[in-house]
Image (tube, rainbow over all chains, first blue to last red; front, side):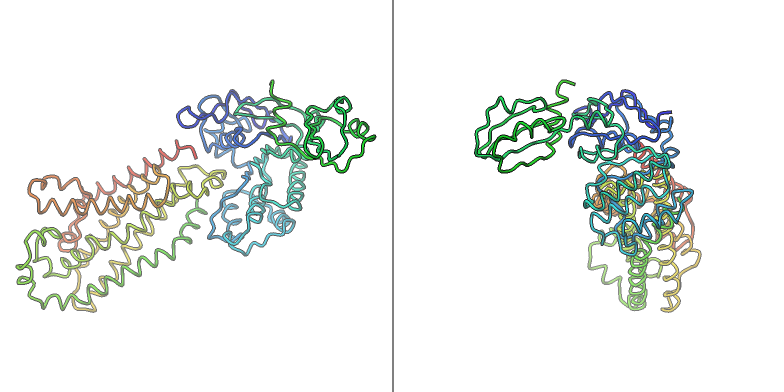
Amino acid sequence: MNIIETKKLTKYYLRGKVLGVKDLNLEIKEGEIFGFIGPNGAGKSTTIRLLLDFIRPTSGSAAVFGLDAHIDTVQIKKNIGYLPGEIFLNETMTGKDTLAYYQGFKKEIDKKYVGHLVDKLGLDLNKKVSEYSKGNKQKLGIVLAVMHKPKLLILDEPTSGLDPLNQQQFYNIIAETKKWGTTTFLSTHILEEAQKICDRVGIIKNGKLIKIEDIDDFKQKNIRDVVLETAESIPLSDLKIPGVTKIERTTSGYHLTTAGKNGPIFKALAKYKIDDIQISEPSLEEIFMRFYKND
Amino acid sequence: MINIIYQRLREQFRSVMIYAGALIAYALLMISIFPTIQKMDLQALMASYPKELAKFFSSSGIETYSTIEGYMAMEYLSMFFVIIIIFYIGSAAGSAIAGTIEKRTADFNLSQPVSRLKLVLAEAIVAAKYSALIVFLVSLSMFIFGKIFNAPFHIRGLAAFTLVAVLFLWALYGIAIFLSSMLRTKLSVVLLTFGFVLGSYVFSSLTRIVEKIQHLDKISIFYLYNPEQLLKTGNINWTHAGALFLIFALGLTSAIVIFNKKDI
């Protein structure tokens, strides 16, 4: 059984003027971690809001656990954990009260596991939510999302407020949930995040699903921006190697966009005096331009 | 649902006590000066004013001041009491839907296994309970202060007033929660509810002094709430009471239907 299944799911806002998502067909299998990748405004959050019945589709259908996302929303949510990129909770409550309040919606809570999560994230539950930093609010959100060991986790850019250390803790918690069979639907615009934890990824752009790929195929692309600083003039023929998709001359050297393994490039550059090399991940927009413009 | 009700009761308790405290303090002030008011030659005083002025505030004119019931109805319960409590009603209703969407707390609440119907109902139960408590405390304090200052109220009148006042506040909550399902901010709900109450009161008063619009008095919600008549006679007009409950039920039902269809 598919945990999430959408058929031609379409959402327009402002009486058809603004497109959220169009003809979205998704099938998320049990136990997988599915990354939903796209730039801001691509339709990731719209999809999540449709699955959670915050908004209603213009056309098409969405099912979770084989149940209708709108009609059976209460039943569905018994087995869902949700974490948005920025969580908004009642600021007057303490962390402890907030936990108790949301535990009131669940049937069974493993208090020991909740304690383990709180300790792992180093969360002070005696403080009021209003006193929490953005990161601590997000940590509280993580506990609230997984405390009932849900069958499905829906995470909307969940690590946006977390520092690298806590991001890693978060990835560990997701890996832990996978062990007991939880399916995760993760929206993100950070490629590295998707590559780190996902089994499959769906690429969404301008409200349309462009492609679904296995993470290994996706990783193969290894799209990178390579900035070379050199005083030497390198002939273009030496830079036109398989994997280099873009070459630009800059004031201090060259700017390359590469895909796949970078070994052949380093080999080609070995005979030149390179002052510095910076390798980074290009923006999603740029990646889409390179790889998915024809999809 | 129980956890929502319990949490909201906890959250609102302090502000409800402040509202109740302020209203009781004002009731004490008004009742304590009633013996002095009685000694004044009000007939002579009012004779110097246009007769419409007295009519604007009460249909029975200056005679109203001769009894504690009439005096409190005119000076306190008709308007001041409603104006103060409407801020609680508007604020509670505004927070229930528009406020949660505005503050974006609705997202996480709606990700829980609870229907939108139960979320709104829980809020309404809390507001209904607390508005009833405020009215009860005010009525009780009026009864006690009346005894202390030798201006006792008829218990039957106070009981009738308490019941109708509760229904009146529930009706106003019905209107406010309906507005909350339509509007985007809590403040706009509070202001619009306040504007509606004030406008209704002014219109109701105008129907007493402008002959041309006298027949339109039923349009105002204040037609259904007459504290002077309730306190003096102790008789409840059950048609009016039913109409107030109907406004509450209709407002709440409409709010639930609209909220259910709303994109958050």
